[in-house]
Image (cartoon, rainbow, N blue to C red; front, side, top):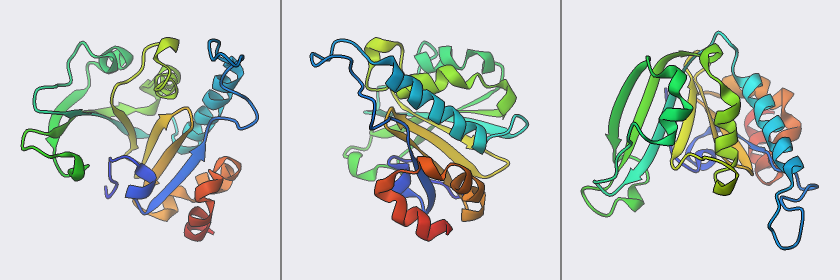
Length: 206
């Protein structure tokens, strides 16, 4: 699969769509003091993310879960991390731990610096409880709302050769090995495409 598991996914891949999750018409906060969250904002983000996910993944599709963190050589992905609690129903699946220096090379100043990754494979979409996973990604910058993932999460659809990455409450990227894998998503979820990058996406798929 020729997809870069690297942020920003939209600018690291040729065949990619970027979607807007947070609403411009609904504020994150209920008050000027920024002490109370507006739950409507987060409900809209969740609804949009779920609709895009459901359009990109079918229950019978085979998937892989990839999660990675930056390490100075000492930091590791541990079984006590929230990632494993979130994906506990898949604990019997094949796990692979790996290190990567071929991404974010500008950040790897020392030989020990690398990206630690764990991959869960042999999973069907129907086995994944996606809502709490999406919630943890949406809340990335709002840790006081609940547990969040400290690293980067990628859900790979092995049947469709595409990858889903929700970076925070603002939006998500879907990358693929070819533009054909994105055509249906581009057509059915066009109203959610991010305006800022719309010209590139239109040139790719119109």
